[in-house]
Image (cartoon, rainbow, N blue to C red):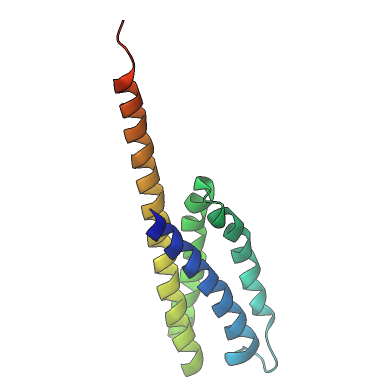
Length: 126
């Protein structure tokens, strides 16, 4: 479970950094930077929840990440070369974040169910 948590946090941080660097310096839509860098702000919201290991955050970030995945696919198809590379990296990071979040939720629910069953087994029968 620690591996999925680490992978989720690191891929989310990677998406934040990629969004900022991509849109401000490396391949902005307009010279000097683009307002599209603001797309990194919504990614900062779940970072605190993932760092605090909140199950609810893992659940909803696995849904929100598909918006960034879709942006990566669209820009991979329509942008010029430097931006295409960043779009491919964005797609990869989104897939990593989704997989890590989904696995983390699944493993935590499984562990909770096993703990509940174990606690029920240890209760004395009347």
